Structures are given as C-alpha cells and as structure tokens.
Image 1 (tube, rainbow, N blue to C red):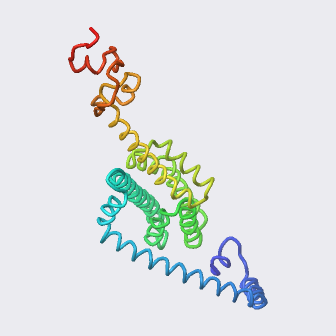
Image 2 (image 1 turned 180 degrees about the vertical axis):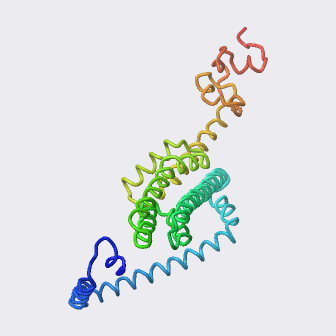
Image 3 (image 1 turned 90 degrees about the vertical axis):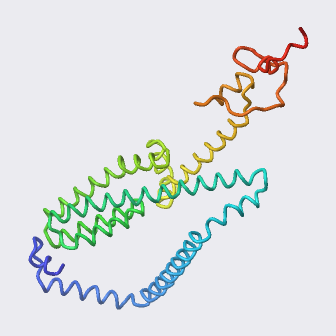
Length: 289
C-alpha cells in the first residue's frame, strides 16, 4: 500500500506517509486506556465464539452419531395418537433443512467458481484464496458477499490497478445479481418445493424484520411452515370419507380420488355429487320404500 501511494496516481511523498503514521501513533498512545478495555472485550467475545464453536462441533457429532434415536423417543413422548405425526413433521423439517444447506453450498460454489475464474483470467494474485473465501462467505447473507467482494476489489486495486479493479467489481456485481435474483431462488425453490416468488418474499420479509439473521433463516423457516401445512392438508384428506357430502368430499379429491372412509356419517344424507346416500352407495334397499 505504501509503494502504491508513492508510485501510483496519488503521488504522495514518503514524508507525508511517515507524518500520517506518526499522527496515528500519537492518537493510539492517547487512547491506550480505551483501547485496552476494547481489547479485553474483544478477547472475551473471541473466547465465547471459540467455546460456542467447540460446543457446536460436539453437538453436531452427537446428532450425527445418535440422531436415529431421537425420533423413537419423540414418538414415545407424543403417545400413540400424536407420536406418529410428530415424527413425520420432524422428518420433513429435517429433510427441508438439509436441502437448504446443500443448495446454499451449491450456490456458494458456483459464485466462487465464476469469481475465482475471473480473478485468474485478469491475473490477480491470491485468486484461489479469494475464491475459497467467497465460497465460505456465501453462507452469510448480504454481509458475506459484500465483504468478500470488497476484499477482492481491494487486492486487485493494489496489485493490478484501478482498471482491473473496476473489471473485478463488475464481475462480482454480475455474479451476485445472478445468484440473488435467478440462481438461488430457482435452486432453493426446486429443492424445497417452493415457488421462487415465495423464496424472494420470505428473504425480503426476514431481512426487513430480523436483519441478517432473518435473511439467512427465512427460506428454511418458510419451507418448514409449508411442509407442516402440506402434512396437515394430507391428514385432513385422509380423514374425509369417500362417501362424504359432495361439498365436503370434493375438496379432498386428489389425483387418486377422495381418501379413506368414515363409518359414522348419516345414512339419510346425500353424500355424492349425484345425491346418493351411503345406503344407496352400498347397494342396500331403501327402508322407507
């Protein structure tokens, strides 16, 4: 950076740079007490992050090792009537979350591939490390992509000059627009059986209400809610009798027709579109005839 400031378009002298460094050093000396307190706070925060990271790794290992034991336990806790529903809903939610993580990894890989390829073609040093950083930053919505892109532009500016930095900036913006408006909604919608419009609206609502965390969790939460609603709808369809009144039964008609049969429906009430009663459907004679 010092060489670029001296030899680049700014043409700053060595004395001016040295004076700027001395000014910063004097300011740091005056603010030493505040900086010490900030350092202690930072060390505490880093320690908490490391502890949480270790705890997350241990829990991940335990979930992978003993995860198959949780569903029978949930079924036993829920009992005979609701245990099966709990297991089914949790299984669908888990599959939805796994699909989201796999899709996000694929999107991040595509971003890193195109941006890294652009950096290699332009001849930017550290192109491979910058591409790897872009991949991991893709898991952090908004901030991750902006940070990785800004770092790539800064490295290009220092090493290759403003012209190549502008080209890298255009490449990063184009890739991120493709990912945010086309690739990510399409892949996530296809993997989690969500329309791309629902994905976009959920991300917008989540980021508006809860910020970055909401943007990251919006899609899996929306997909989980949709899976629960689908299961509820399927459960209702299974409970609607085949000979229910037409105004009730037609709502449950799917590709295989109405589901299930219910023995407790009134015998004298028409239950089909043709106005047939349960007895007439079974071929029994009319007792009032």
